Image (cartoon, rainbow over all chains, first blue to last red; front, side, top):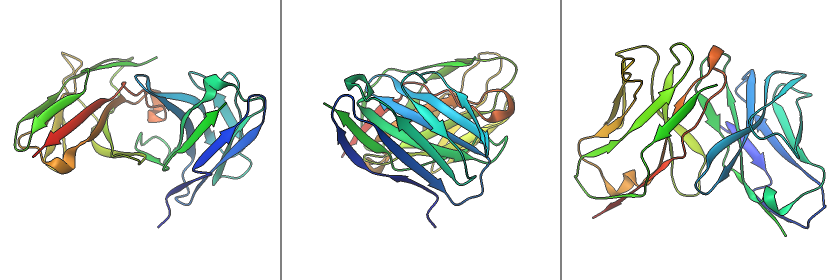
Amino acid sequence: NAGVTQTPKFRVLKTGQSMTLLCAQDMNHEYMYWYRQDPGMGLRLIHYSVGEGTTAKGEVPDGYNVSRLKKQNFLLGLESAAPSQTSVYFCASSRSGSGEAFFGQGTRLTVV
Amino acid sequence: GNSVTQMEGPVTLSEEAFLTINCTYTATGYPSLFWYVQYPGEGLQLLLKATKADDKGSNKGFEATYRKETTSFHLEKGSVQVSDSAVYFCAPAGAGSYQLTFGKGTKLSVIP
């Protein structure tokens, strides 16, 4: 009963490096989301997708790109990492229109 | 878009004390309302929800009532346990219920 799985769980990057975070869900959900969580800021939406092949910007999209080539996967890319992108990243998915999101365990990213 | 104001934390209570975490929101129309909980080292998980005015969501002894007139969704529990120590997030859902706007979270610590 996997639910939402994020890989990797931890990563340290040097400034300017690139990486991709992978999110996979096995619940056949239409909607998927990427959030970042920072102390005192709560969760902020980076990008989201309402279906395979579609993506949209959230509250804090700058410096990130996403792709949803398959319904079950949602990838978050950092092309040139910056220290300001040090954060914990959460992926979530939901059934269309329900508002009830299922979250992954998170990826702790440190950019030095 | 939606916005939410949550009670500032951290909150420290003794076991069996009464808990209230205030949440007020601004939104277009009448959004569904959610409380999510994040236990240490984990992702968020749904605690309870309410989809229309005067609805009461409840789960694990927690309750919250959708108050349209005061745009509030305060979380309550009559007798907290050490295992309730976590961060609690209030979240109204946006149009179509596919976008959640999270509060900054309230950290609760329950001491024996």
